Length: 90
Image (cartoon, rainbow, N blue to C red; front, side, top):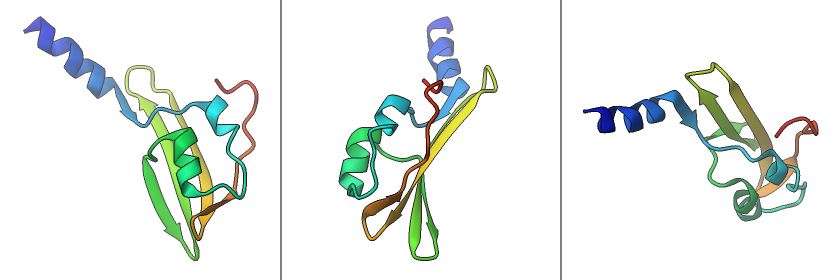
């Protein structure tokens, strides 16, 4: 029973997609969505907003209550909005 409980608790404790802020700093406007995914992996969510999409990576830890997210703006398959990521984000 104990061997099954530990993996289940690990899965319940974290939700979302991993975020690598160092990789996110490499994303630039003008990149294709394929290039964006090569740096960031598959997004947690894609939301349509007027003529653009917001590609979102989000991670939450149920044990610590911590949450982090990052999003990029995409239009016609090209990155058109990149957030400023502080150096302190690891």
